[in-house]
Length: 396
Image (cartoon, rainbow, N blue to C red; front, side):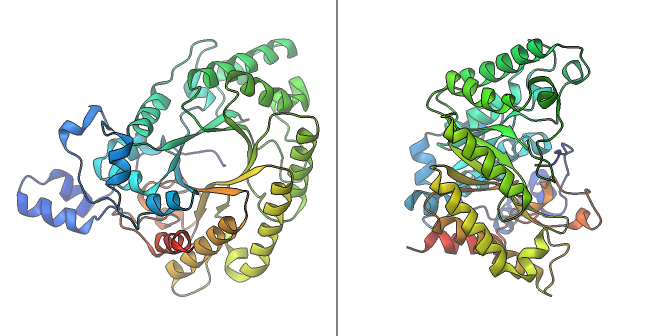
């Protein structure tokens, strides 16, 4: 994961007309052009709190079409999901059309309302408003949750990043932070990204506040403290550039193998798989080799007894090579989904965002203002990439 943007991008055209329409004809027309995966629309009486439909899980599941991503993934006991739900002011659970689409696009969502600066902006003072809203939506709609993230070198509040603390004090601060969050959501969040991006681009442990204060022990301690707070939660190490071969995957493999050997309660590894900023080209120009590396890595992590989740996937169009870039993007999504599904211990694929109008990568690099990296377009219509994953999930 790279540092997330939080600015809301407002889509225009038909979506704006739909929201503003006061006449029946225009409302019907807009609804027809912005087809979500689920047929019924939310009514005002559906919400028990803003943006949170008051549906039972059974009804939420039953009202999704049989060929929706959610239904197909459920049938084969695989998790398909969407992450980044705090992006653009939580529009995915507040906008009725986005919420309807999300509900039938996911069996699991990544609740990323746990960045330290948001949850503990002042030492010992916790605020769970963002996380609670997303969690309430998930429970009302029968969708499982991943929690993101407990320990990361980014998104730290000023009091922590610039404070003068001893090593013992930082150890206590970290333990308190982890256990306050995990215990609050005990039984509600299926899996946690406990430690995020602890390895740098050269394969070394990243120089962070936690490494300087506690040494490499901060990783083991974080997993043990999270496990104490919720013994039933699955605990993941999460990182990027780690799905294939190279110095980073090798170091991460050694790291998690060592944790397993010392009986540290780690249950999985998250592969972010942000194929952006040039990383998409390896899957565009030499996809068989890239997929073979991924399959080998999935196998060896699985052989350690670990689950693997693709946790934050998006595929940029900017440097794809074919004339029909959407078709090439779809092929990449489909082949990665197929590789994951074929591996017994790869149990989830999550994209970072729902639709192209609200991607975190917008404005990050040349060409990204008009990029389209996700499964739904700017009008919440399913793209070829969506259909490619749906075809993989439909296979038996």
